[in-house]
Image 1: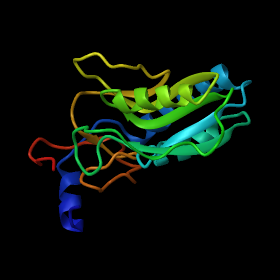
Image 2: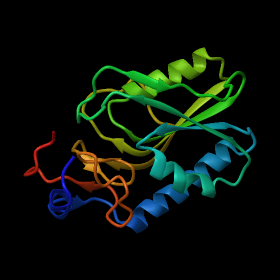
Image 3: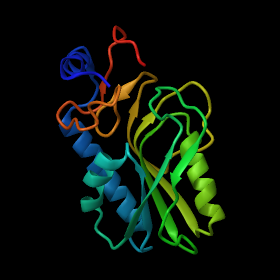
Length: 188
């Protein structure tokens, strides 16, 4: 974790990919798409901790239908920038049996985490599975899952802000949303 000065340096050297206004418009569009598709299903919405907290907190109030809410805590990253072995820290507490389930995450990177969540939720008896991600990373290889609802597409570079961190910092960015780290700052 950087100190305050280092964290500010990272932010100051970053490229802003999307403004707060662009991000808000993307979340508003996603809410409309989700409402149209799932508005009559009374879904169980699962947020993936901790990256999806900001996105989920902005999206849920815009969903104009009843829903149940829970979370899962699963990660391939830990304190690293490259994915590793999948670790389940918390499965859904709510019963998913015969439910329509919508899983929200900050980013669909390689898709391994979301695919594992999908498989687990369906194996637990969910009637249907949908995924929504704030950011879909455009990578050159195929992914095991495509998100049903996407806010923005981002290039295949390290991005942070709006729930995504850089060395533990800047998940809370709301004004320089989804800023990209400069190549001059090496990832840990």
